[in-house]
Length: 116
Image (cartoon, rainbow, N blue to C red; front, side):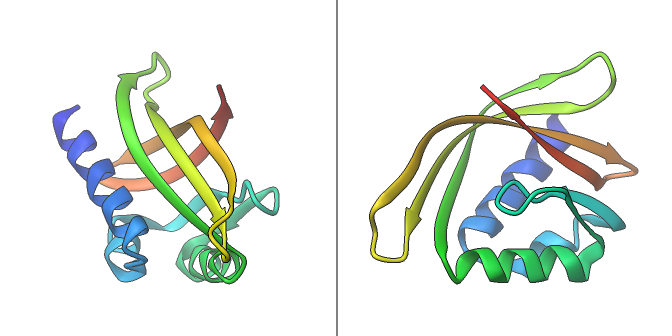
């Protein structure tokens, strides 16, 4: 689980830095990424990139992992403190969420969001 935690920490640091290439290098080519802001999933690198670029034109999210747990179904549960601001700096959301990762062969295959 330590390798998975290191992978997740790397992803969040890259996300907060808006470093899309670093994140996509850790994703399966057909990754399914929950589009909490729009609904459904972005599938594949191009759709995930496009989703984030649209999101960042309207919102400024920052996410920090605060805890990890391995679920019985094999998913890695990541407790996250999420702060989302609008582009003027007003806080839209500040609170905990759970991100659920399916990881296979060292690559992220899917990310789901579960409300706390």
